[in-house]
Length: 134
View 1 (cartoon, rainbow, N blue to C red):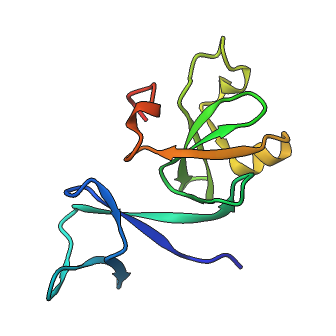
View 2 (cartoon, rainbow, N blue to C red; view 1 turned 90 degrees about the vertical axis):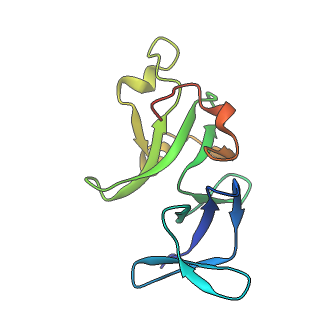
View 3 (cartoon, rainbow, N blue to C red; view 1 turned 30 degrees about the horizontal axis):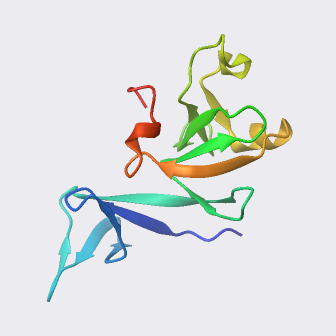
């Protein structure tokens, strides 16, 4: 069974924070002397239950690169499929034959022997996003 855990991006401070938690579906943020419900300024990002080739935990909105081809994906959960995967950043099919489909599940990556590495995330490293609709 995988750990259900989150990390939190504070969009006001533009940094990850450990001062938050989730309870009853609400995100709470510890302030100096009070705890308050957030107003959308804190974004919870769920742990996928996976680790990259270096043992680093993979979270929602991380950017991973496949070792074999160097293709980049933004990690997201596909509700309709019920699984974690990556939305391709380099969507030019001439450069990437796998991208006839613009999303690949982690199980597909493993089946195709694609090791991946976390190289950043879309909040701290927006320069890694070449495609603006990610």
